[in-house]
Amino acid sequence: MGTLIALEGLDGAGKRTLVGAVVARLAERGLTVGTLDFPRYGRSVHADLASEALKGAHGDLADSVHAMAVMFALDRSGAVGELSALLAGHDLVILDRYVASNAAYGAARLHQAADGEFVGWVANLEFERLGLPRPDLQLYLDVPVALAAQRARGRESADASRSLDAYERDRGLQERTGEVYRELAVKDWISPWWVLTPDTDPVTLAENLALLSDDTARRDEKEHGTP
Ligand SMILES: Nc1ncnc2c1ncn2[C@@H]1O[C@H](COP(=O)(O)OP(=O)(O)O)[C@@H](O)[C@H]1O
Ligand SMILES: Cc1cn([C@H]2C[C@H](O)[C@@H](COP(=O)(O)OP(=O)(O)O)O2)c(=O)[nH]c1=O
Image 1 (tube, rainbow, N blue to C red):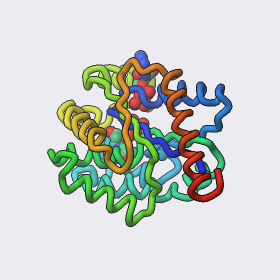
Image 2: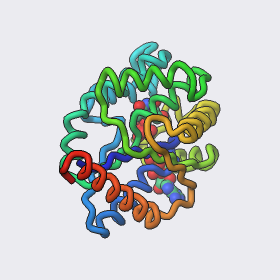
Image 3: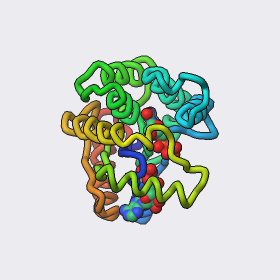
Image 4: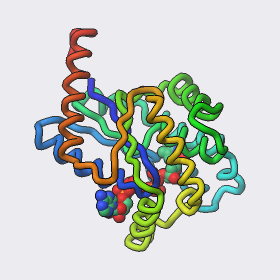
């Protein structure tokens, strides 16, 4: 059973880039790593509907914080089998966004904090009702909003398919989302969190993740007799 790690952060924080670098370092160390990105655009009708709504389609769908969160949650629900298979076949599984994205963005839209009603509603919906696996570790890539926005804009001009959506255009929302993420990290919401800085070295991060994966494997062996 692999170690499940979720990487979180604002739009343009550099999540995708960091996952690529860390996976390469872990592979060099001989570890097997599975990856999955949420939302699963092009593979999940719920993810596509949410993305289209953020670009102005589907009437007032994007106006509803809860309806948008349900779309993203149903995308993940459709991936439960795929996640189980990834965990069964790899030492580590790294997710680019997971349940905490729903918690942070939704709470921020509602001007709530991490101890507010919305974050509890997300945990109940996704971990209890939909039965999604809890991550062993959550990483928050803590990048200043201005830097993340600059990177997201740079990506937009390099790739027309990555045009900015309603959340990415809303600087206030990005600021509040960052605050909720930091609060989730401080309270170790659902599982332990590590906060990463913009200059995080992928080599050191990979070393620490390899150590964590060893610990998890040893714990599983002790508890269940299987690595
Ligand atoms: N450490 C970094 N230094 C400079 N540019 C970066 C760094 N990380 C990412 N970028 C650039 O910033 C943009 C957004 O990065 P990306 O990994 O796609 O972010 P995210 O997945 O968090 O939205 C990309 O154009 C990427 O090349
Ligand atoms: C996965 C997920 C994303 N989001 C938000 C974060 C982003 O602003 C937006 C789109 O996700 P994102 O990963 O940024 O997709 P893109 O490749 O289009 O940049 O949806 C949620 O609100 N809840 C979720 O569960």
